[in-house]
Length: 113
Image 1 (spheres, helix red, strand yellow):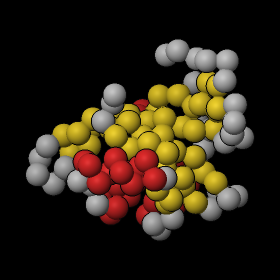
Image 2 (tube, rainbow, N blue to C red):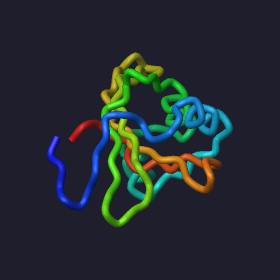
Image 3 (spheres, rainbow, N blue to C red):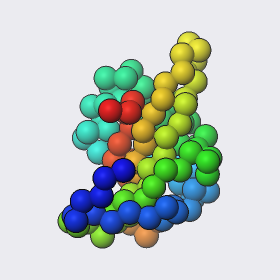
């Protein structure tokens, strides 16, 4: 992965996965406008996105990124998600905990580009 001078990377998650899953189960996830567009294009209803977040495992973790214009670390996961129709989607998911770990902010939810 290429690292620009405007970002930092680390090989461990910045956010507790069990907290991410707990907040997803409670529906406390904010979808950025980009994620709203991408999930609509993929035909993913919000409940399925939340189910996918709840299914994340530590082995799905890839990297954590902090951009120069943000104080938040963004954890990146990749997962093979099986849809109800049996199709398996490879997904790239980037998220962070915000507001004192009271919400998950979903920054990316799309097929790998």
